[in-house]
Length: 180
Image: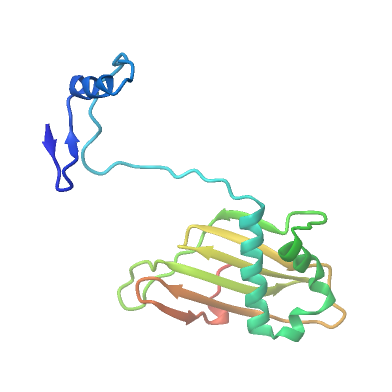
């Protein structure tokens, strides 16, 4: 038996582990396989369920960013009532306000050309819709429909920020370089 720095066994033969468990009152089980775990790097897959609380959280981030870049008076307009009800109370009428997809965009460091690890939030007007993208660690993009169906007064919003995790800085993204 090998003992680690904490004094706990790191590696124990199965028969010793069974003896120790049996002495504590546990029934001895049958060994189905004695395969050792692989050494070195192995590929993994993370499986998670993104449900209403997380989607409301992403919608809130997007809505707060809209208020930050366009102003509170703008965000209080009636056209944003549906997303406001979803964020505050979980009420959703009609189609999904938040769509999740893989992030298709790679941001590179201008100095090194290496991909940046970070988070971004973008808000923009497309046709008669105000939408936002919220992406954490450049993995999943959460596209949030903030308002659709047109505005009485035409509006234009086009802003984005990227938080570089390694550099610990928030960078404003030029409006002509925002991802599609």
